[in-house]
Each structure stands twice: as C-alpha cells, then as structure tokens.
Length: 265
Image (cartoon, rainbow, N blue to C red; front, side):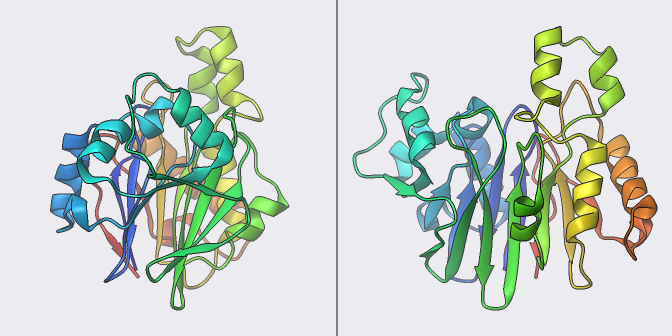
C-alpha cells in the first residue's frame, strides 16, 4: 500500500491512498489543478482513480469536488449526512448523476482490492467519518477533524501500519490568537479539532511495533506550525504511559500547500 498527503491543513485537504491496482483519494478540498499536480507526482492519472472518499462537507474537504468530478466522473463515497451536505453546497455546482454512493458507519466495503471501513468521529458536520483502509495484511488510516476521541476511536486505529493523524492547533496559540471567542470555542470544543497535546495522547494509545509512518496533518495556519506540532506530539509520547520514545518514532508533518513524501508499506 501507499499513502501520500497531496495537501493537508485548515485551508484544504486531499490524501492519496492506494495499492498497485487501486487508487483512492480522501477528500478533494483543493483545486482540480492542485489535485492533478499531486497525482502526477505519484504517477497516477485522474481517470485511473477508483474512488473518492469524503469525510464531511466542510469546504476545506470538498471545494474541488465539483470541478474534478465533472471532468473525471470518479465514484464518490460518503455517509448519508455528508451527501446531503454536498448536495446543499452551492459552490460545487451540479455533480454528474449517479456519482454519489452512500456508505454506512462501521460497514466495511471494498473498492478494488482495498477494504474501506468508515468510522464515526466527533466534529460539527452532518455525519462526519474517518476512514481505515486495508489491503492484504497492511492497513492505514486517515483520521482528522475530531474534537475528542474515545475507546471507539482507539479501537478503529489499532494495529495500523501508517496513519495521517490530526494535530490541528497549539492550545496557547489558539487562546491568545486572533480568532473571535466563538471560533476559539468551536475549535477547542468536543466537535472541533484535536490539539497537538491531544493528538499525542491518542497516538500513545495506538502505537505498535510495526507502524512505519505517522503523518501529522490538518495543521491550523493561524494556531500552529510544523515544528511545534512535531515537538509537542513527540513529547507527549515520551512522557506517556507507553514503551515508546517520541524521537525514535517515524513522525513527519504533512505539508499544507505541497505534496508530502509518499509512504510505502
């Protein structure tokens, strides 16, 4: 399997997950041009994609879906609530008929030789989902836009070979930053986003000896920066109740506006 962040941040998200024969995108929150440029670096053509998985209907996850879908007509998979949100989005324009396919939380399904398992996350959207992918003995997950996590989340993220995990904001930067009070409450709330510290604590619960890559993603442009997210998550792991040390782990930070290095597992 292969996973790569084409873009990951509060301004737009698009993640590639694939095998030798199956090519998928998680979210299309950037322009068609940027998606195509990212796919070109991965040596994948737009018409070779087998599916697009949408996590939720916020613009930083779907803004490129309309234009991209009208050109390539790739099947789009999302929960019923997210499909409703997509259809209500005026900025996308009309999507080709028959492209939207409803998926159910905790009901795995297959696209090509990849099994996809959508699972529930806590976010202020209609019916948001994160996705776990498996092909053969390998598995990866894309898990962002979570205000909180619980045992259910941990169970769905256990025994992975690679993960893209949200580390959205530094708590202090958010508190003293320029966001209005209501937006600060939203970001830090139970249906908001994971802070660096909370991301590190979640990581402590899901680490294993065969995890090849941990990509920190969906960083806030205003309330975080790469080195801070990296160092905070690393410290949480080192101080946490687990046998691992942060500096020994394969942790990287997904770029906001450019493709990140591919992970092969």
